[in-house]
Image 1 (cartoon, helix red, strand yellow):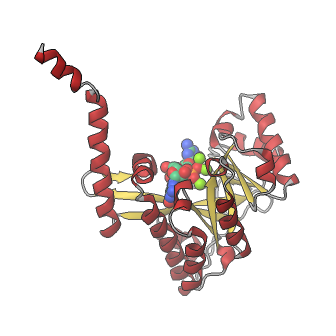
Image 2 (tube, protein in one colour):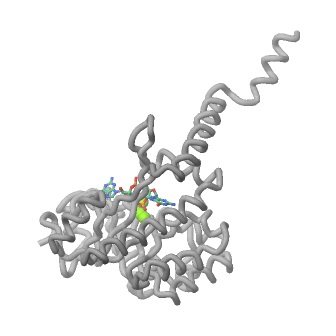
Image 3 (cartoon, helix red, strand yellow):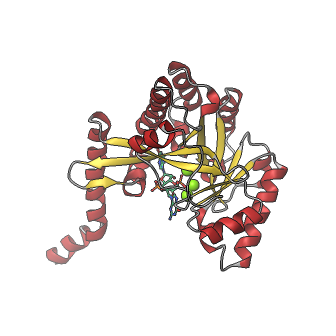
Length: 286
Ligand code: C2E
Ligand code: MG
Ligand code: MG
Ligand code: MG
């Protein structure tokens, strides 16, 4: 019967899949516009050195002020950016904006801690990422130690020589490399050993369970030992309370990041904080 075969034909996409496809297409074209109309911006979350209690860095986090949907976070659009290839342009925008803002603060006599930008594995497929980053750092006359990148274990999965070379180029240029969300992927320890990384960031899912799970405490101190043996600093992310902080310190972590130490800050808040010469957070660490 014509009616049922017609229905079968259009069952290739379920209504739900269709809805998602349309939604994603909308996000993609909106994102294309966003890049050209100043809707993207960065917030900066402090990272604190446990031993000194002082700010050790800032992580730049991407935000999108959508004209209709309001303020969006990466979870709302990074996947579409990755799938559409727009992540290449977005990544360039992020590095440029971070460098521009570091330089702008320096021109006002305000020294920021080093800034880390997140880089998607996909970005390594567009042109020469490392050269672009080094160019930007030179263009804005920023000391290379003032910028670092965060990559995820996913990038390390296929043991790509090209990726490895790009990371070595960055390292030689003085750009720090952090491995983000560590412990959730499947990178081999051999590859980790040979990687020019300076920091290991333990994924926040482990920190969320640290108070109640001795298994998670064991994993965290094992990661800390491993990182130190490989000459890397260990950062715990998603630290929300004093109890977690105390356990992380006891586990050998070097640095902490999370709502306990400070939420992601708008640029004006950054100016208030570092313009006033604040070198440590008021809460959390003594
Ligand atoms: P991430 O790099 O692991 O960043 C940490 C995330 O944890 C951020 O989420 C941050 O706001 C959140 N966070 C910080 N402290 C706490 C805490 O105490 N508790 C909890 N529950 N969460 C906390 P955000 O800003 O939504 O970013 C999510 C992810 O999006 C990032 O995870 C990163 O993978 C990606 N991302 C962010 N900015 C960029 C970017 O510029 N480019 C790319 N490619 N990816 C980005
Ligand atoms: Mg990160
Ligand atoms: Mg992370
Ligand atoms: Mg994370």
